[in-house]
Length: 119
Ligand SMILES: [Zn+2]
Image (tube, rainbow, N blue to C red; front, side, top):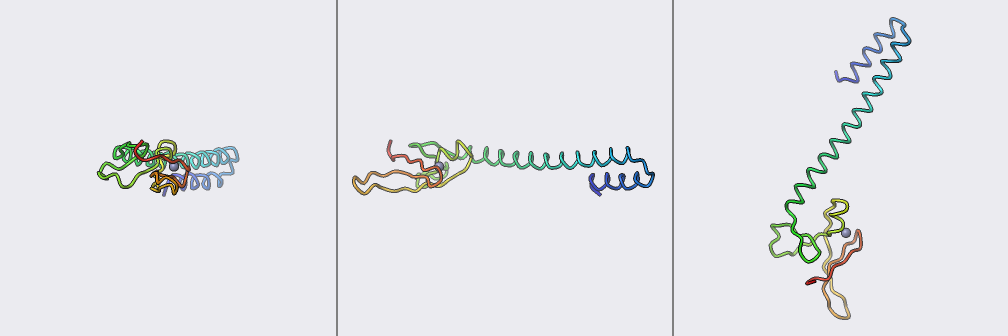
Protein backbone atom coordinates (compact mmCIF):
# COMPACT_ATOMS: atom_id res chain seq x y z
CA UNK A 1 0.00 0.00 0.00
CA UNK A 2 1.54 3.32 -1.07
CA UNK A 3 1.21 6.61 0.82
CA UNK A 4 -1.77 7.84 -1.24
CA UNK A 5 -3.63 4.58 -0.65
CA UNK A 6 -2.85 4.78 3.08
CA UNK A 7 -4.26 8.31 3.35
CA UNK A 8 -7.37 7.24 1.42
CA UNK A 9 -7.68 4.29 3.79
CA UNK A 10 -7.49 6.68 6.78
CA UNK A 11 -10.02 9.04 5.12
CA UNK A 12 -12.43 6.13 4.67
CA UNK A 13 -11.95 5.18 8.32
CA UNK A 14 -12.49 8.77 9.53
CA UNK A 15 -15.66 9.00 7.43
CA UNK A 16 -17.16 6.20 9.55
CA UNK A 17 -16.82 8.42 12.65
CA UNK A 18 -18.68 11.21 10.88
CA UNK A 19 -16.08 13.87 11.79
CA UNK A 20 -16.40 16.19 8.77
CA UNK A 21 -13.55 18.52 9.80
CA UNK A 22 -11.08 15.67 10.24
CA UNK A 23 -12.27 14.06 7.00
CA UNK A 24 -11.70 17.30 5.04
CA UNK A 25 -8.22 17.66 6.53
CA UNK A 26 -7.34 14.12 5.47
CA UNK A 27 -8.66 14.79 1.93
CA UNK A 28 -6.60 18.03 1.77
CA UNK A 29 -3.55 16.10 2.98
CA UNK A 30 -4.09 13.51 0.24
CA UNK A 31 -4.21 16.28 -2.38
CA UNK A 32 -0.95 17.73 -1.06
CA UNK A 33 0.66 14.30 -1.24
CA UNK A 34 -0.47 13.94 -4.85
CA UNK A 35 1.03 17.36 -5.68
CA UNK A 36 4.31 16.44 -3.98
CA UNK A 37 4.39 13.14 -5.84
CA UNK A 38 3.96 14.95 -9.17
CA UNK A 39 6.65 17.48 -8.24
CA UNK A 40 8.95 14.65 -7.20
CA UNK A 41 8.46 12.88 -10.54
CA UNK A 42 9.16 16.11 -12.41
CA UNK A 43 12.32 16.73 -10.38
CA UNK A 44 13.49 13.16 -11.00
CA UNK A 45 12.97 13.62 -14.74
CA UNK A 46 14.87 16.93 -14.69
CA UNK A 47 17.66 15.36 -12.68
CA UNK A 48 17.94 12.48 -15.14
CA UNK A 49 17.97 14.90 -18.10
CA UNK A 50 20.72 16.99 -16.48
CA UNK A 51 22.76 13.89 -15.66
CA UNK A 52 22.43 12.68 -19.24
CA UNK A 53 23.40 16.12 -20.57
CA UNK A 54 26.43 16.27 -18.28
CA UNK A 55 27.54 12.83 -19.49
CA UNK A 56 27.19 13.90 -23.14
CA UNK A 57 28.91 17.25 -22.48
CA UNK A 58 32.01 15.39 -21.27
CA UNK A 59 32.17 13.55 -24.59
CA UNK A 60 31.93 16.67 -26.80
CA UNK A 61 34.74 18.59 -28.46
CA UNK A 62 34.20 22.05 -29.94
CA UNK A 63 35.85 22.52 -33.34
CA UNK A 64 35.12 24.90 -36.25
CA UNK A 65 31.83 26.11 -34.70
CA UNK A 66 30.54 22.55 -34.42
CA UNK A 67 30.57 19.87 -31.74
CA UNK A 68 32.01 16.42 -32.33
CA UNK A 69 32.10 13.38 -30.09
CA UNK A 70 35.63 12.75 -28.80
CA UNK A 71 35.70 9.27 -30.31
CA UNK A 72 34.87 10.76 -33.75
CA UNK A 73 38.57 11.45 -34.31
CA UNK A 74 38.11 12.15 -38.03
CA UNK A 75 35.36 14.67 -37.23
CA UNK A 76 32.92 13.24 -39.74
CA UNK A 77 29.75 13.70 -37.69
CA UNK A 78 29.22 17.34 -36.55
CA UNK A 79 26.54 18.43 -34.08
CA UNK A 80 24.87 21.81 -33.73
CA UNK A 81 26.43 24.06 -31.08
CA UNK A 82 23.35 26.29 -30.78
CA UNK A 83 20.92 23.42 -30.21
CA UNK A 84 23.24 21.81 -27.68
CA UNK A 85 24.19 24.99 -25.80
CA UNK A 86 20.63 26.32 -25.67
CA UNK A 87 18.47 23.20 -25.25
CA UNK A 88 20.87 20.30 -24.66
CA UNK A 89 19.65 18.66 -27.85
CA UNK A 90 22.31 16.79 -29.77
CA UNK A 91 21.31 17.53 -33.36
CA UNK A 92 23.26 16.08 -36.27
CA UNK A 93 24.28 18.63 -38.88
CA UNK A 94 24.09 18.28 -42.64
CA UNK A 95 27.36 18.80 -44.46
CA UNK A 96 26.69 20.43 -47.79
CA UNK A 97 28.30 22.68 -50.36
CA UNK A 98 27.06 25.75 -52.19
CA UNK A 99 26.52 25.28 -55.93
CA UNK A 100 28.11 28.54 -57.10
CA UNK A 101 31.44 28.41 -55.26
CA UNK A 102 31.55 24.91 -53.75
CA UNK A 103 32.11 26.28 -50.26
CA UNK A 104 31.48 23.51 -47.73
CA UNK A 105 29.37 24.29 -44.67
CA UNK A 106 27.29 22.59 -42.02
CA UNK A 107 23.59 23.27 -41.61
CA UNK A 108 21.14 22.54 -38.77
CA UNK A 109 17.62 21.59 -39.81
CA UNK A 110 16.27 22.52 -36.37
CA UNK A 111 17.63 26.01 -35.65
CA UNK A 112 18.84 26.72 -39.22
CA UNK A 113 22.30 27.80 -38.10
CA UNK A 114 25.16 27.19 -40.47
CA UNK A 115 28.90 27.28 -40.19
CA UNK A 116 31.45 27.38 -42.98
CA UNK A 117 33.90 24.54 -42.57
CA UNK A 118 37.47 25.62 -42.06
CA UNK A 119 36.62 28.92 -40.31
ZN1 LIG B 1 20.66 23.67 -34.32
